[in-house]
Image (cartoon, rainbow, N blue to C red; front, side, top):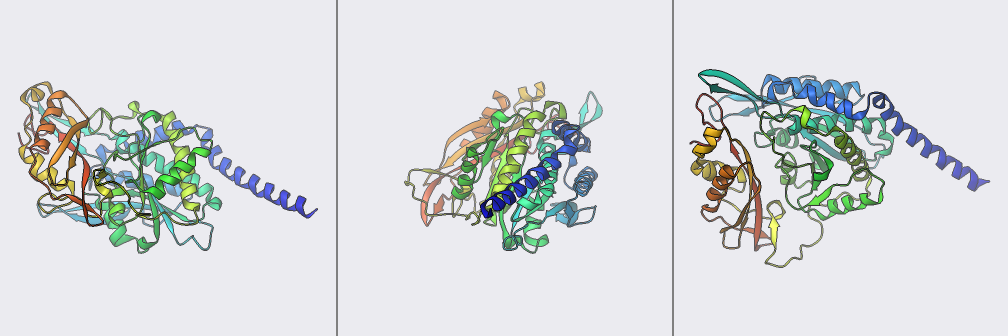
Length: 443
């Protein structure tokens, strides 16, 4: 009789949990999740490109706030966001903001530990071009970059809040402002805003999730504990499983968490031809694929929030041969260029100083972002340069040429030993403003 009673109780709680999960979906199922994701993306894409510090970014923050509130998620900031200032090179202060939602975990021993789920709020905004003597406004709507991540964050918050009884740790949902400005919003959150940052056990970053499940990837900076959790997900019946990659899909807010030694994973479908162009609009996204990715990320978030032991930042010993090539962020001491370990310094001081916009590309109106990967060998030499995401042969060859001409770096180290390291950088070619060529570089 006692065995029957215990079984009945277990079945009851399982039914309750299942019903709660389904109830979180039923309100949306009437309109279908893909349609809801499309609505979020369309609205966020209409906000003048959401440039850091702009009115468009502020409107996007308010939209995320309103949706989280509508879904019953607790907010840790007012509707205007958690506002911070960022000093610009010209002396002005850029005013940006984060939006922070909170769902408390049920386990009294773990509810004061947190999983952060984040998505960047900002994009490139607008630029003015002169075409046939007239000013034309170009708007970079950023539907995939990163309205897709924000839409996924909003719907993920709905699901987690509905099913909070099955999450041991508490979950923080953060839309990060000024991500394009050296991940300023993420840095501010970790170092100034959130007082319990030392109790953040892991971070999940959502960036560019709309271009189809075939390119769905998970990047953990080669963290073995995080990779093991990802591998454990294959036993669950899920509509899609990401490829675990050792190559960073996109430099986003997870970098700020990694710099604070917090295990992180970036979910992304990677670069795409329309990235950082006017063509990044809602119609190019695969919303059915986004729904499948949402289901996976929800299941992963629940698994991560419920592990007994939090993932370690650098678990175990690194036992690799000296001739291995290590990801840049997997090194105790990253490679440095002229004393700086941030690749952005190399991009600004070297790449953009010597890059030339090909005349033919100017005439043809060719622009975009070229992704270049290269290795820093043990002597600090730049080797094995390759374009991993190209735009056009003219731009690809110019970006590759300038990187190959780089002066020597100071090589990376792991546990005091010099190692080879691999870096991926974005090189922007833009046609904007009143001259035919005005980009992050000078012609």
